Image 1 (spheres, helix red, strand yellow):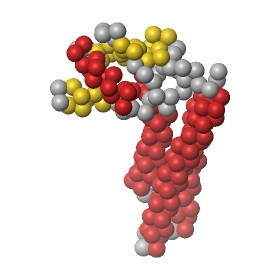
Image 2 (cartoon, one colour):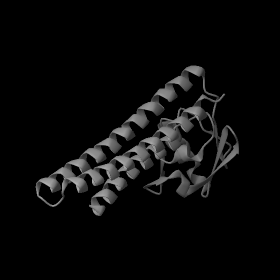
Image 3 (tube, helix red, strand yellow):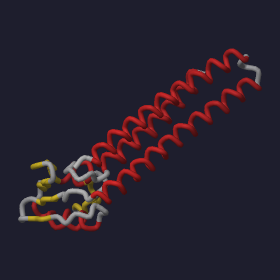
Image 4 (cartoon, helix red, strand yellow):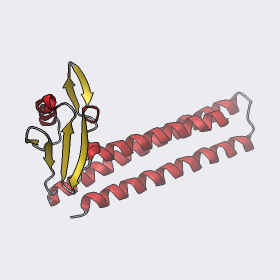
Length: 184
């Protein structure tokens, strides 16, 4: 049973980690290098993440600076950013690329807040699915005669406690991201 509980908790942690990553790449009006994580650049025929071909820094709250280690790929980085769904036009001076993040409008903040809620709800569904799978396995083990009623109740409580803790973590993460987006 301990292996089942660890497996279930691992599935729930993966759902939480995925949510956390989605929130990191979500554009919230402030310069955040992690929004470039999914963008790949053609570097000598290989699709490489930007962070592997350039240094990325935040020069002020709304400007990201990308400085390629090889200046010959500046145009490739610009193309990759333009093709992405960032919605920000890169500005290059031949040595570095700057991404200026405009402040978010009120409508865009509300839209992002809804997206944040949808991502959180999807993570909760994953957590609940992991709980359901674990509870089904516990009941199957009981039917096979390997657990008695008290052991089943104890294991179900453990699973429920883990589920509750992950739901609280997801809600907390959602609230923090919503507050970040709604700040002017």
